[in-house]
Structures are given as C-alpha cells and as structure tokens.
Amino acid sequence: AMVALLECLIQLDKAGLLDCILYLCGVSGSTWCMASLYKEPDWSTKLDTVKDKIVERLNSPGVSWAEKVAKLKKYYMKDSFSLTDLWAVLFVTSYVKE
Image (cartoon, rainbow, N blue to C red; front, side, top):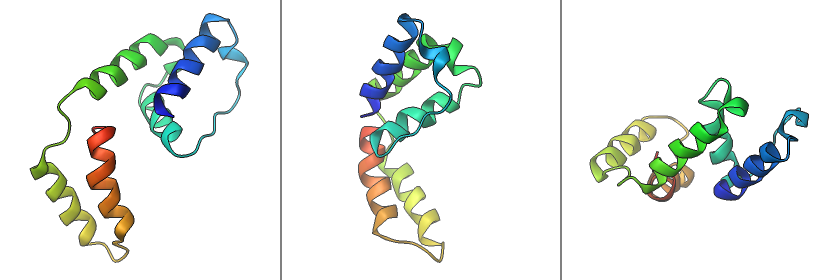
C-alpha cells in the first residue's frame, strides 16, 4: 500500500492532476507513505525527491536489533504498553525500516 500510493501520486503528477487534490487520507500501509510525504514541506513539488528517499530507505539495511530493543524499552515505560507496540517495533521496523 505504501508503494502503491506513492506510484498513484507520481502518475497524478505526470497527468497534471496532483494539484487538484485537496486532502489525502489513508489506512494501513498508505499512511506510511503519507508520513514520508509530510516530512518534506513542499512534497507535491518535490515528489521525485520524496520517492528517492523512500526507495533509498526501503533498500537500506534497516533498524538494528539494539535500536529495536531500545524502542521497546521506551514504549514499555508508558502506561499503555500493548501488543501493538511490540508488533510495531518488530514488524514495521523490518519492512518500513524506520
């Protein structure tokens, strides 16, 4: 879903329709794409740059086990630690590499 939304936005830009979009919404993997977009203030004019950063990150080695354990320790200290936190650290960091 992350890659699919990115490609849809690129195709909208090529067709000259990206500027017609007022709002983006997403669920699941598409929100990971949106999070990457919003790191760049003018993402709609720098879509190729954002795409290159996402591709570079997805091709990178990712998050080390030491970093994952540190994140889990940080989340564990919260009152609302849950299996979602465990899933996010172990699964999402493996695929999204953030």
